[in-house]
Image 1 (cartoon, rainbow, N blue to C red):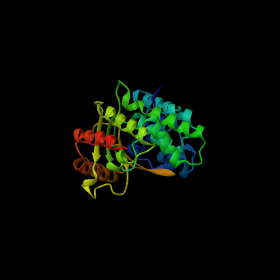
Image 2 (cartoon, rainbow, N blue to C red; image 1 turned 90 degrees about the horizontal axis):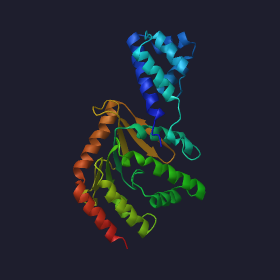
Image 3 (cartoon, one colour; image 1 turned 60 degrees about the vertical axis):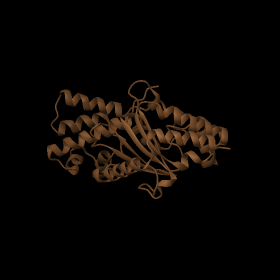
Image 4 (cartoon, rainbow, N blue to C red; image 1 turned 45 degrees about the vertical axis):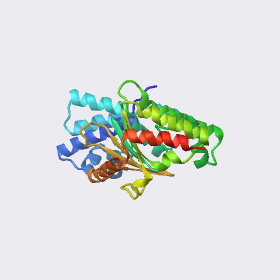
Length: 286
């Protein structure tokens, strides 16, 4: 399965186009006037809410003084790639637009840091656990629709199990996630065994935040930080709720969540002790 992410390509294209516009000294209104666009369209294009055609990219590069050459060709190619469909397009019948954006970012992230308060992250779930979660949360969905949701979740997991350049995944689980029995005793035991297996992967770090810690830095809920380079600078913090999501990209916002994650990992059990607690939780299930 190709893991190409047009979402990330589009994001990078917009970053480069905005950089070139600023370097040329042009304002959004001037570019819009030159291209025959309304100011609102230009705002939507740079904001990422409106897709841009390859011909529009060529026109913008000409306006910004970027002639034929390596940079011009690379950005035109990026524009072409950003308009292609991602592998998750096959699940359009069950995946909302706001979550398509996240899957696109996740598919091409270099690393993912995550805190979960109630349930296993989707990249860690077994098929039966995921099905039980959807049956509880999406009571109006048919069994076929739930099956499609589960299939998408399983397909996403390739990014941490593939042999070449897997996602570097560091997750911190509240103890509630390993204590809450989801799907029955047998399903939950299988899920905890799956956690232990995944924790052995060299690209996965798993910690449990025990009840004994008391109040902690993420009392307000789960979050994820996606990174696309080793040096940072373009990290995205992702927050999800029942009907949508929020993406935080301002450096000060991302720093706040990075600091929060650092506090959590310092408070959580180390990976070895976390595995001990996970195995104990499996034995405690009646």
